[in-house]
Structures are given as C-alpha cells and as structure tokens.
Amino acid sequence: MLILLLLSIKRTKKLLSLDSGRLIKERFKGYNDEFEHMYNIHNRLSVVDPGLRKELQGEVKKVFLKRYEKFYDKYSQYRFSKKKQNEYLKYAPQKVDNMLNSMYGGNFVVTEDEDSD
Image 1 (tube, rainbow, N blue to C red):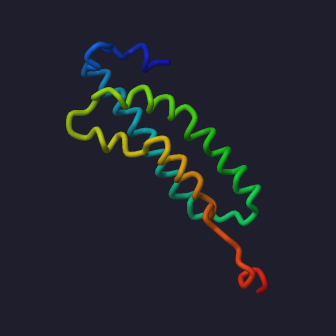
Image 2: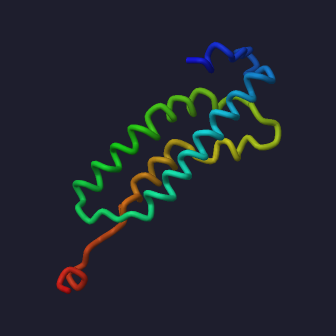
C-alpha cells in the first residue's frame, strides 16, 4: 500500500513527517467525504423487508467499514494534525457501524395500524 511506503514514523514518539501527516489527512478526508455522500443518499431510502435491509447494510459495511476500521485503528493513534485532528477522526468505526445499521429504515417498525391500510 502506498501509504505504508510514504510514512516515516518514529515509533517510539509516534511522530510523523510533514508529508506523512498530509497523506494521512488526505486519506481520512477522502473517506469522510465519500462516507458522508453515500450516507446522505442511502439514509433517505427505506427498505421494508428486514432480510433485504440487513443484506444491503452488510454489503455497504463491506465497502465502508472493513478496511477503514483497520486504517483507523492503526493511524488514529498518531498525531497527524495540530489543530483539526478531531475533524479527521469524527467517524470512529463504531459510529460508522451504528450509522450503517440505521440506514434503509433500520429503526423502521411496522405496526398493525400501519399494516392494515
């Protein structure tokens, strides 16, 4: 992976070179932008069938959660931004998982009154 080749980390102090810090910022920003775009579109959709909803959520998790979780766990421990670290780390993997679980009407419950129309 390109990022691993470009990082020059001093492991004892968890410091990054300027270029390495910029690269990590770029990666987190890119993920955040793509995730927000996808979430804003998909969160407006509603899937009534619980099995299909779970399947869709699982497919989206494969794309947006699996690799991000590893990346986040590895690089969130480094100080790569002096002023805006929290902005880049605003989506912890657990938060992403919770947001994905709520997509497609994940909190949607059909009551008998709604079903009898």
